Figure 1: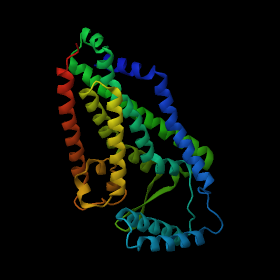
Figure 2: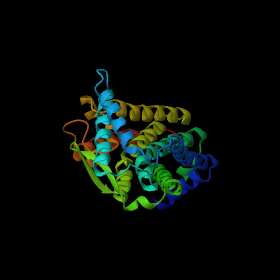
Figure 3: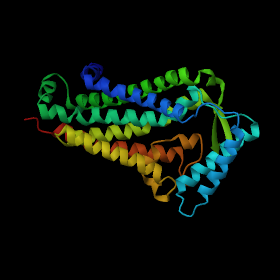
Figure 4: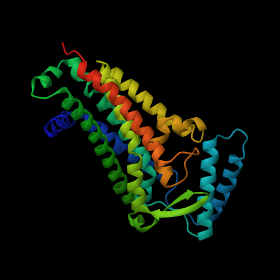
Length: 311
């Protein structure tokens, strides 16, 4: 199995467009830093107390609007508590390379997942469309091994790109905002109270708890790629579903029906550093829903790949 996975990885990394897509993730990190610096964020001003008090007053008014969405109210209440914590502790808010990386980890996983979707969307369909699948089948390998090696290679690619993006956010953020924040605490709101966690713990756990989005997106693309010969069709449909699912999960956060919407469970961070948006959601429930969707997609893609005619 390992030689086949290595072979698939070689085919992925020898393409120039693969490295272009990796560079896009790194460029995204740089643009986020530029955006923060342009907006004047990242360093505390002399009148930071007045700024936080004004921000809390504004957030309170926005949360009280009759047409405010649940997600807007939730985010406003959370930010008010965090701002008030800084005021009570007389500690100005600031940004370091570590806190910047913690804030960006979900977006980095999202960007890396979309790039991995492109790889997964063509990794099977392109083989059948070009006829190169015949060369693989002439080797002493079963279709099961080929199927698993391609899937594992796509997942490993997504993990590598996301890890590279995370490392870039630490290094670039550190050069701009400083590396001194490693010993600082990551502040989060749980049960209407501000709590603290080590920055490194928040960074690593945040990365791990967002991997389910990568798994769902890549598996979906792999399933569609196994079902159709067109790599373009597989990539476009997979990207549309993944982006739509990500946006809906954020926009509809807190709605009761999202309890059964798998993309609402692809970020498990609130279960550890916050509260679930819907009552009854636990780590076990979210994990079971994710595993169920992964199993269903594999039950669709595997028979299609094994039984597909290569003539």
